[in-house]
Length: 72
Image 1: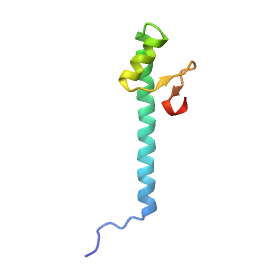
Image 2: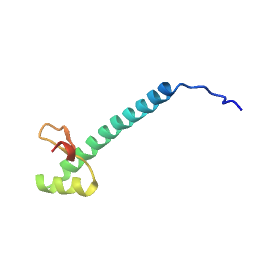
Image 3: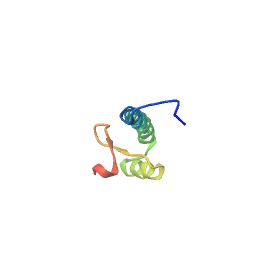
């Protein structure tokens, strides 16, 4: 029995890598928007950090860039 589709492993790996990269980019944009919304509604820095931690969101540094727990 033969397969109907003969794709090379490198082509398939490239597609999966592209999909993962796209998903990471989408997550980063979505996370940044959510973190900014939380920050704008927080009483102070500690309140913001607590809310972000409760929501499982990454924190923003003083320049608005995303800081992940691994980067701290």
